Amino acid sequence: MPTAFALRRTAGLTVAAGSLFVAVGAGAWITVTKQLRDEKITVPGNAPILAGKPVQGPVTAYVEALVIKGNAERGAGGRTFADISAALRGVDASSDEAVELRKQSAALSTGASLRTSLLTSVLAYGVSAFAGGLGAFFLIVGTQLRQVDAAG
Image (cartoon, rainbow, N blue to C red; front, side):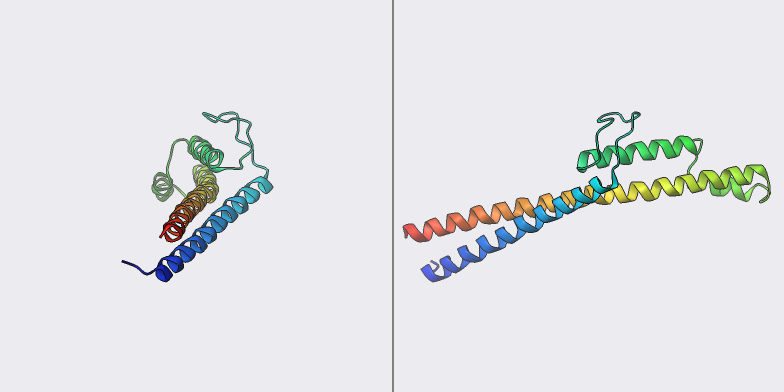
């Protein structure tokens, strides 16, 4: 059976860790939200949901990433980087077709970069929610340990 001192110490450390995790999780969520808001991105009209909404949270960031992917693929005629690379190897480098293929490749590259940034923010939201949730769990456990100590 743990001593009262060990139980109090464990409860205090658990509450402190919980408070830290909640603060870090909330801080990360707020920071990512502010950065997305500062970009002033709006979900376009061709989005499956949330069209016209500002991108300022995990769902709108994810929807925007999906729209960018679809638009980039349509702009490249449904071709992938691999398709374009293979096609470029088979045409004269100075031809009009090569110029068009390089434009499609650049559009896909830009779209991939934008999607990566948005999906990174979605991941950051997940990590911050995990940290905050874990912190809340630690706070509850620490509080319960204090109550056990006070009752004992």
